[in-house]
Length: 553
Image (cartoon, rainbow, N blue to C red; front, side, top):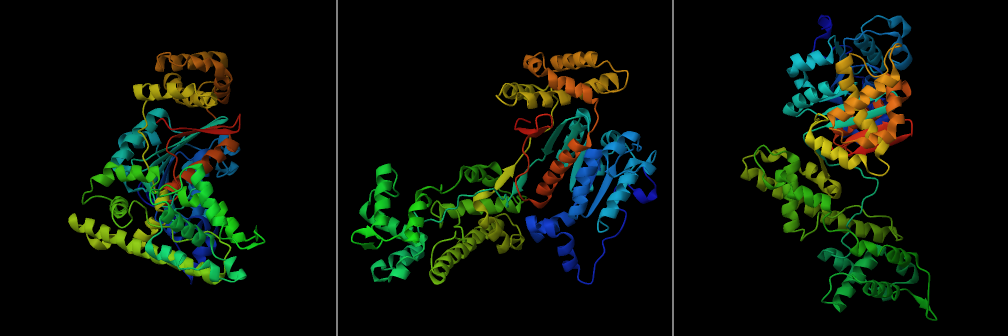
């Protein structure tokens, strides 16, 4: 262990300071991050305590990003000394640091980067700590394990799963990198997808929306008003007219029916000598007809959440997320009539400000009513299980309802030995997939180099006296024996094998910086509950400038 100021559980260093206006200081200091994950995300980061195992180049890069992001505290576990190799790969050390404890040097450097973050270190090898003091990890929000062997990764995974502490594993090996998360269950409310299909219920309007559309007399409007009716109103009005004429059909399904629906819309355009006058709002209505029949009432991912055992079998220990999901399911079966809560924000529409705001208010009012209905279901559930009804606020329910179509639940598989039957069978399916062969070869070989190290006390190709061809043959033999000769296709990727041997287990900063950035990104996802974290294993191949994700273990 380190000296008294560097105790295992402590967060030592500069204490968090406050300016005269702490909130303004925080906005300035963390402005770029707050723009992405908001103040509530920043608050989650500021409560986080992170433990980093090994502070070589990859780990230092990952932790640097978290310190700059404004975490509460960190602890580095590492007993290595700074050597010449570190000077060429790790920007957190200096030539004057040669021979000093690496964890101490990196901790001091990171403290300088952000004096609002507490930092400490433990002078012990991660392997010894994992084996002899598993309770050490109990007080941390998340663990970052870098450059860990397969043996240590499996042991750490078992410890953290018992405590339900997420782990992010990152490894750099020459021109290759591997990244994976280990989390029992991670529920995401703000998944922030690149695109979302919203259901505005143009095809299934509620009474107030339908009344607003049908009460509008298009024939009584002047030219300017007629050309500025929001396309949402036109679509709802057209759908109402469609249902009146086709009592046996809910929505236009066939191509013929959709052409008829389009003709109905265009028939309302003003004409001169039977020639339609160009009106942008009608063009928008035609372009957005798919919003009538396109969105699913409930996406398949949300149906899977509703069918999840955690949602079906609530207890007094159920999390807020699962209680709200159960309430949402009850809502869809009652007031929602098969629909999720409506989206309260409308897309841009060619319209007058007055008409657009009137339409938007109808949506906001409906959303508020539906949020209240979901919250009432939450209260009923909590009362049934003897839970304090103040635990789930209406604001939390509102946030979930805002993102209801993109809720996600991530559960990763345990870190298993390569020779486990389930791991082997999954790998066999993947390694033959077109375009994934090289990445699969890297994944397999990265796990085999640890077996090589256990046997020979060095990595393949490590050291000036190493015979690389012999080491390559030994590595192939380890692969064959640990997988019962299942992967003969590795022969087609011998250039990857020889590149790994040539690397000799070393980290290159250009690759370590990428892997560190990816690792810190996953940590932020897990801490803030925003964006969907990696659910499998990511392989970074710097030789081919590619990343591949394997959803197998």
